[in-house]
Length: 155
Image (cartoon, rainbow, N blue to C red; front, side, top):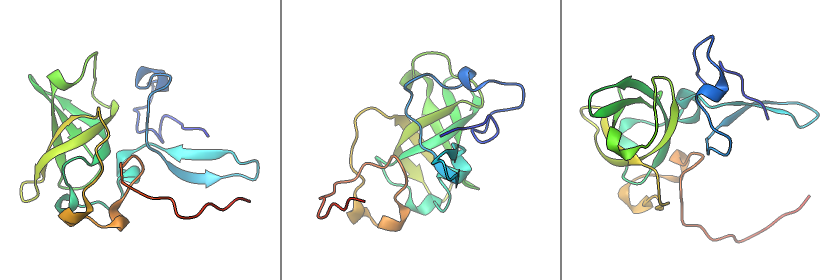
């Protein structure tokens, strides 16, 4: 699979290595697939999080976000969803984080009326609680779910 700077949401003139580390977990969406099984991916939050709305955000959901602004004590996050922004305390992350960086965060709480989602660094996987009103159609890459495999098909 390959990802260009544009598909990762990185400004022109910047390198992928300025924003990503080897072994870093990212969520992506396949844009194209060639006959040689080469895939082109998008990591942009507006593509990965497409179809999500503020009212379905629940605690423990793990989402991709771009750092939109660096404030004194927080990072403002862009999920690529109009009218929704996130806040992540700086103390949650170690190392240097800059505007445009793609990070994975866990929803801590949110106000759907204000379009503000409080986030925390994603550490321990906690399954999404489907009894809280979220449906299976809202599940995205990277969401942790409790599941039972009932059938395996090969070939």
